[in-house]
Structures are given as structure tokens and as C-alpha cells.
Image (cartoon, rainbow over all chains, first blue to last red; front, side, top):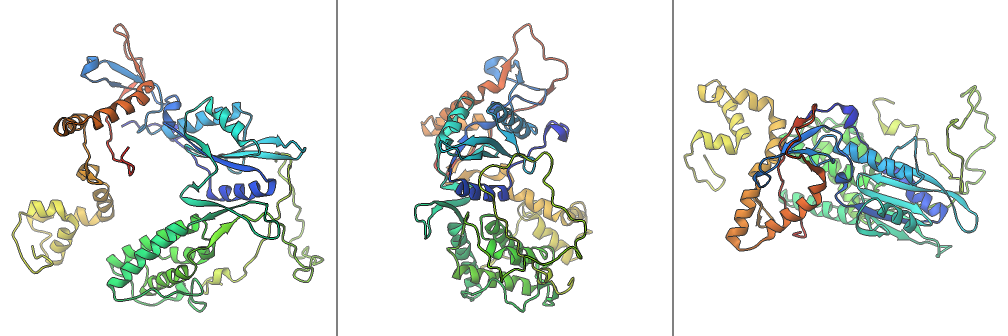
Length: 345
Length: 135
């Protein structure tokens, strides 16, 4: 095995947050989304390590240099990423400073609407947001062989991708991520597990009991087998959050703090959370690009915060790209209860 | 060994250690056998490396022989032997298909050429697997 330095092996993939923002931008700019998968990905990139091997007896045991990023070499992932980055640069895309696996390119629709089109890269999975997505895909086809061509996404990184419509404008399409299939399978498994204990999973109205504080739980510690069950179930719940179940984000984060030494109460809370999922197994995350019209009485916009935050100015970074397209409204909901933690409050 | 159905049977320590290393290590510890010569050389190590061993056992590629009811070979010779026995060319075709894709990764040196300085020799092998769609 080779032992190359991390400088030639380090590689990244697009973050799920960036994927979520991309789906929102697609609805905001009213552009199409296409996905594709590049076949034999790594073999497109030149090898970064100087390695050779010996060919089989049919080649009389000749020495063979490895000139492409062969599967199994430590540097192959990074070699492919650098190769694709080079291709996207040739196509005029720039890497985003906030997430280097998001690539953007200024674009303009026939009606003069200016925006950025995007390419999101997860190793060999490419997601293209553009009003001319086919053109981008065809440009990529000049460089790589695309497995099964390209199409609007039905699944992306494990989540089901759906197109959503809601009133008043039923012609506009919004993108949505859902994990219905995964959640139903997980519920089925937990029900089978509880059945072995002569227990049932009851539907719950909320993800966690409002009075429950996991940091104050003094129930006995779980044994080795139960710890394993707790850890695997929390991992499944974490993956649900990744797939778009943001409604259980806080509860799963709280339960994740006790993976090393959970108590019986923590495991019961996991079952409770599954009860909530049973009652809400069809929840879907819809990327709604509509602006929220906050009423004046909800927020005091004239409030003077300078006493709390003196000398604060909001500057754009000097190297930020030129703003294009419609503005994005960011709504922040600040919870001052320290995520309900009664110890650190 | 005392089995779940109530039956008992005798097995060599080596077999039990190979199949249930962690259970046996815990048994030795609980029954104060861990200082005996047959246990002393491996029980403390097994207990200490419990997590790592469990992970290794789970992912032990070499222990897997079948997937979706199909025998998965470990070497090219084994793959071709399966084809011979079954009178098919499935593995042969799969190897050819994969090597056709991988061909561009290899540069053969001419008879009068030597390996350039700085190049390191590595071994290469094929990993066989059966996909869910049997391709």
C-alpha cells in the first residue's frame, strides 16, 4: 500500500445544506434541475502517485505503469476532483468560496433575467441548475461518458426528490425532498424490535415530551446490547434529518449527545420519537421560494439594538460575486432557551 | 458449548476462538480463566481492542462467500473455475468488461524500457461483487 501525503489525497464533496439551498434557488430563479452520473469516474483522471505493477503471465510479467487514478489508490478521489474542477473551469464555472463543490456561472434567460446557473458535485453525481441544463450536460458529455444520460432528479444522495405545487399559483413548480420510504422502513424495523419485547409503537403528536430533559435523566445505564440498539437507532434518525426531516433535528441532536453512555430513559425517548414519526411518516421538505410577509405587529422594526451591538456594520465580503437574480429572504428564529438544556441555561 | 435449545457439545478451543472471539474472551474473564496459558496471550488484547475487532469481523471480506445466493469468487482463477464448473461465461465476461474500462489506466513498458526512477511497485487485485440487479 502506498502512503502519499494528505496534500494529494484530500478531497471534498458538496454539503447537504448547499443542496438544499440549490433546490430553493431553482424555484426562485425558475430553472430546471438535471442530474447525471459519470461512469468509471476515477479512470478519467491522471494518477497522482508514481506507482507500477507487474502484468499477469499473458504479458510475460512485464512492468506496467499506472497512469490513471485507479480504484484503490489513496489519491484517486482527490485526483478525480481536481480533474473535474479543471473541466468545469474550462466550461467557465467558478468554485464557490463558501463550498468549493458548488460551481457557478453567470447566465441570462431569453427575457433578459440574469442569474447564476450552478453545478453541484458529489464525486461522480452532478446536479445542474440552469434554464439550459441540457446544454451544460452536452458540454460535459464532450469530456466524460455519462451513465444513462441525464434526467430530472427522482432521487439525489439517498433522498426522494419530488416536484411540488401549491396554491395560489398552481403552475409554479417547487422542489421537495422526502424520506418517506426510509422512514417507513425504519418504523417497520422498530415495530418488529418492540414486538419481541411485547410492546407496541404508539403514534405521538410531538417528537419529544415537553417536560423531558435528557440531561437530567437519572434512569439506569443501558447494557451493551441496548447501547448498540440506541446507537444504531440514533444513527438512523440522524440520516433521516440529513434526508430532510428537519422537524426532528433538535431532538435527534439532543439524543446524539448520549451515544457513549445512554440511559434507559434516552432509549425510551428514541421509541417516543419513532411514535411521532409513525404519526407523521409522510412529511416532506418543500423548498418554498415565496417571500414571507411579516406583519408589523410581529416584529418591532424600529427597535434600537445599538446598545446591545455597538459598532456593528454588515459588509459584504470584497470578493463576493456580483448579486444576480431575485434576492433571498432569510428568516431567523432565535431560541433563547439554550435548546431547552436545563443544565447550561 | 451450551446452545440455546438446551443441548451441549464439545468443540476445540481454537474453533470457538475463531468463531466467537469476544464472547469467549468475556467468558474467560468472568470465570477467571484469562491468566491460563491458553487464554493469557490473546484475551487481554481482544478485550482491549473489542470495538476494532467487531468492526473487522463485520467487514471481513474474506469470510463472505455468497451474495444474493450467488457464490462470489475471491480471485480471477476462482472466478474462471466457477465458469468452468457451471458451463457459463458470466465471470469471464465481467472480467473482460471491467478490464476494457480499466485498460487506459495501464501503460505497458517496451522491452527496452525500464521503470522510471521514483516509481513504487504495488500489487493489484480484482474485487468481485454481485450487484442487486445481477449486472
